[in-house]
Length: 305
Image (tube, rainbow, N blue to C red; front, top):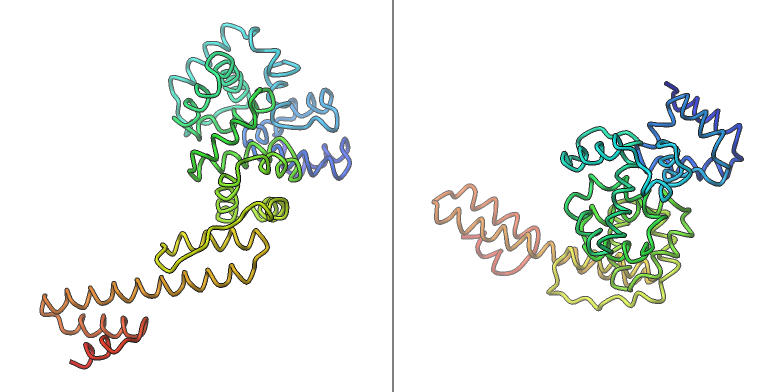
C-alpha cells in the first residue's frame, strides 16, 4: 500500500500544480476513493486511463468496476455485483467499511432509483440514511438529470447532515466558483440556510465566495428584541454575508443582551427555588449572579434582604 507522500509524488508527475490541487481536493471528499488510490495497482491503472482533467471520485468509481462511466454500467452488472448491491442494501449501515467498488455499485443503485422513481424516490432513499448514501450520491450526482433539484431538496430538508452532504457533493465534483454558481441558483431562503450552515461548518472559502455572489439578494429580516438569541446570531451571519458589517454587529449586540437577560432570569428562578428549599447559601449566590448579569433595583433589593 502506498502512503500519502507516494500518491502525491505519482500524481505530481502526471498533473500540473493546479490540476493536482483540484484532483486531491475532489477525491478527499469521498474517503473510499482516497483509500482506493493507496492501492499501487489501482493508482497505476488510474494514471493510465484518466486524463489530467478527469480526476474525480465518480471517474475513479467507474474505473473500480471496470467501466468507462457509471452510466454505462446500469444494465451490465454481473450477477455477483447485483448480489453485492442486495447485501449492501440489506445491511444499510453507514458504519460498515465500504470499498470504492461498493460505492460504485451504490451509485448505480441511486441512478436506477432516480430513473424509476424520480426525484421523490431518490430523496426518500437518501433521507432514510444520509450517511450511508453520501459517498454514492457524490459519485452518482454528475449523471443525474435533476442535479439542481437534488441540491435544493437537500438544503430544504435543513439538517446539518443534508446540507453537509450538499457541500460534499459540490466539492467532490467541482471547484468553488462552480459550486457558488450552483448554490446561487437556489431560492434566497435556501441560500440563507446554506450560509448559516457553511459558517457553522467553518467552510470559509465557500461561505465567502457565496456571500460575495449573492449579497444583494439576501435582504435579511429585521430583528427584534424578542427573538431567540440563536435566531439573532443567524441573522447576524446573513447581514455580514450581505456586506452589512455594522448591522451584523448591532444584531450580535442584541443577541448578547438577550442572552444576558435570559441568564439573569434563570438565576432569579434558581434563587426563588433555593428560598423555597430553605437553602440561603444557594439563594445568595444565585441573587449575586442575577445582579451581576443584569442590574435592576428589584434584584438589588432581593439581595439585600
